[in-house]
Length: 189
Image 1 (tube, one colour):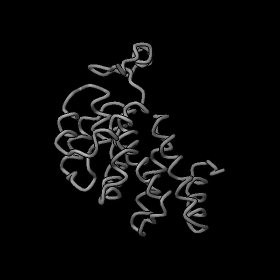
Image 2 (cartoon, one colour):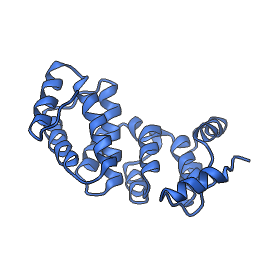
Image 3 (tube, one colour):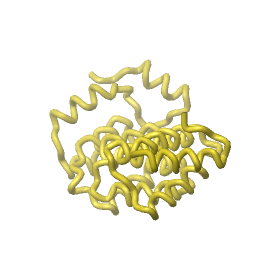
């Protein structure tokens, strides 16, 4: 009943490929996830299916406190689309107790989906006032500059969103961000 063939076809036309894509809307999937509630075993089972809606539901019903880092690693290896990377970051990864550790690992990756997840999670953490330590700041700024000079527009977008949130942590962070961006001839605002 949630199927929307027009949306599914539009996604295929734009190069977003899933084994199965019903084209269900995110609000409908969120509503279904609320009905289901948090369920670890169901989330694991849903993720195993290469079906867009199952993967999205898995990110919504997985209990954050039960998701082990090893499971996150498996899910990241199996993430092949930008949509799932962004939704997993927003729906689940940002809430994990070890979110920052995973995000720093991901921004050091060469995989586009890992970079998108890493910068997306850091953006959410910065937005929620989580300040990185000195090592984290240095790592973040180094990887940020690398990402902004790369070829992927999706990664650049995620990186820029994160640096805006980084700068909002306070004046010192803003100055660090501005200085880093200036080194590659970019401005924050």
